Every structure is written in C-alpha cells, then in structure tokens.
Image (cartoon, rainbow, N blue to C red):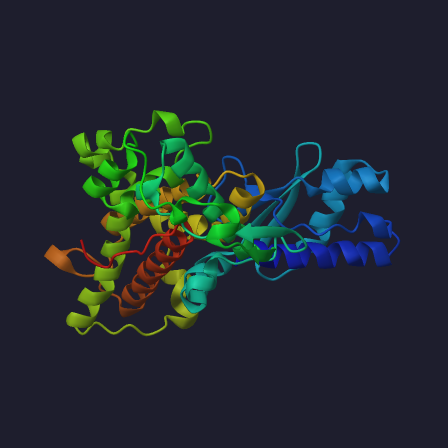
Length: 354
C-alpha cells in the first residue's frame, strides 16, 4: 500500500543522507506508522512529523531536515510533490496513477490488505473470541471483545504474537451460564452475536456501561453495523450483477487512473489506502474502536461513490466506456475486500446479501 511505499522511500532517503554526511547514523529512523492525512488537502496526500525527531537527533532545525528530505523524494517517479510545511512537517502528494493503483493492490492482496510491518519488533497476545452471551456485564463483554481485537490488530501490523487459551485467561468462553441479571443474553438473542460484537467493538473505552443497543432497533437508519454490512453486500452485489449482465471485468491496465477521476472515486481510493495504518494505530493506541469507525467511513464513501459514479448502466445511468466500467468494478471489489477484512479483524463474517 502507499504508506508502506512511502516508508521505504523515506528510509532510503535518510540512509542516502547519512551516507553523504548530511545526517548522523543514529538519525536514520524507521518511519513506520508516522503518516497522517495531510490537513485540508486532496486525496493522495500524506504528512509526517518524523523530521522533528530526526532533527532532534541530528542537532539541526526540523524545517531544514524536512526540506532536505523533500528535495530527495521529489525525484521519485510516483511522488507528485514533496514539500516541507510548518516548522518541520513533511507533506507528500502521490500521482493519480499511484492513488488509483490502491484498488488493484487491495484486490490482489485480499484479506492480507490489512497487514503491515508497522509494529514489527513488538509483541502481543491473541486471545480467543469470547462468548458474549454469557458475560456478566457490558463492561466485561467490552473488555473481552477489546482484548481479542487488540491482539489481532497487532498481529496484522507485524507484531510477534502469543496465542492465549481460554483457560489461561479465565474468559467468559468457559463460563456455562451468565448471572441472572446479565443484560447480554437478551441483547444477543434479539440482535444476534455479530451485531452485539460490532456494537462493543465501536464503543469508546470507558463507555461500555452506557451501552443501549436497543436504541438502534428504534432508529434502524442510524445503525452503523447495518450500514457497513449493507455497503459490503452492495459492493459484492455490484460484482454479481456485472457477471449476470455478462459485463467484461478485465484489468483496466494503464487506463486505471484515467478511468477513476471523479472526486468521490478519489476520496474513496484515498480512504482505502489508510487501512493498514488505521489497524496499526488502533493497536498501538489501544483504541480498537478506531477500526469499525474507519469501516463506517468506507461504507459512507462507497455509498456516495456508487451514486455519483455507478459502474453499471441501470436506469440510463452509469458509465459507457468499457475501461471506466472495468475500473469502477475493480474499485467495488476493493471496497468489498477492505470491508470483509476489517470485519474479520472484529470477529464478524461479512455478508454478501442483505
């Protein structure tokens, strides 16, 4: 993905600067996980504060370090621009071709699209998914869900993992029955375990005792889990309809970037490019709720993209250029893969039909 490519280019530039005597060896830092969306810029822009830390180790002004790195990175073919900003931030814009390539790379990677090496060198415990229906309280259910997610997020981000058994952790999975006053059995029976698991997954730390999943039953249109599952099913059904209509689904090749040019398409591509970073950040910050909220952003972006730039010619709408149709179908497939992989890290199987 783009952020991993940026890591490699930035590290190569730092090593070249050290070899040229522009930086001490100890200032050559691995940039993994430092990228953030650039403020108030278009999709395909990535910013990092790494020059501040490099400058501290090198005894140089951060703005000078950022400018020197930017000068080297601008020679990279797929980087459109590299500019210092503020007092030492570095902002990089990638070419439309590099941004569009995200769709192809996600589909090629499949479930591995969540993976990175950002947390390489750290360790984490992968715990089993808990039986939420026998948890005593919402807080206990939230903790067990958060623990199970955290280990899987860290593993996806390159951490060395240790597998924990149910018996070792004393989890709810080995309890036969919940206490009589537990609210979990009724909630699981009414909504299903996947909906409750998702509700717990997106709950902020310290807010589990305020959970009211029945509120979503009263306001179904505001149910974030339904929105994510619907987006996945919709992307999957777009591909099914294409097959049923005998629409050719060839790889757009070099025409990919030229075919994905609308603002919603570019916004969606930019959002998809952040998946591995979001997974690693959620693990590092111990904020598992960040991943489901990211998936909700993807679902919303897909809904907009499909409306503005539909792939299939229903009701006279949609593209007529075969290259555009193929590119949009590839983007639909990328959305399907990302949502499926993200839900998998939460412990939920994505559905292809609703």
